[in-house]
Image 1 (cartoon, rainbow, N blue to C red):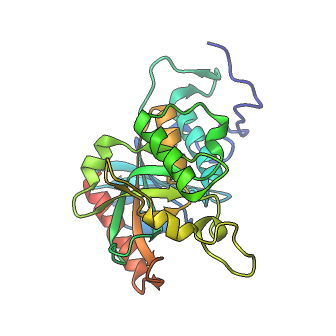
Image 2 (cartoon, rainbow, N blue to C red):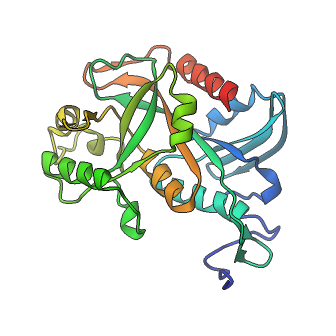
Length: 287
């Protein structure tokens, strides 16, 4: 296999991957991903011990054990651009020989669990519930630069949403890990998540700048594929990047959301810290 160039796979002086500043020995096979760097401690405070810490930009890493299992928690920052960096470099740690710069013949599959916050776009999804994303719908342009295989069903949903809203592009649609969906879905709302490329207009919010799609939130709420009973349930900024790159790289990926806002009712959680902490404990007890 051809070596990967020094400008494609950039390493630090100590041989660690460029942005995450990690070596293969620093991570476990189960990764918990959080957007907010402050949430790393919110997860690792439950560990029996923490044997490794790294702070590099928004990417903060703690690795330790929880009930004897080695787990890594890493913050990613916001957006699918950060997720591309995060997942590509994680994959390099386990599937590329960093000394020879050659892909390994035998590939390792990581389990990656996103714990995030999200706003519901269906009136009947209560505040402070936990939602697991079966499918993600990407409104960002990351997959314009990759050849993402999609099922006929996924392509159909993307085309329907484009037409329903009147978008100038076709959203990409991708399913998460079936095994992790089965592991975590008990006592959670199973939903389909829209990943937006921004927080304000791309999620139907207006401040001082008029939004190009003033009915975006309403259109997302009322989109429905009757044949499959497919509804859109919530909005955030990373899940589609996780699911698409997880599929392309061969890792098990699932996104779990603490619902801290209901956009239809214009209500925001007064207990969001507890809601996130309850989700963290739920995840740790199941992994």
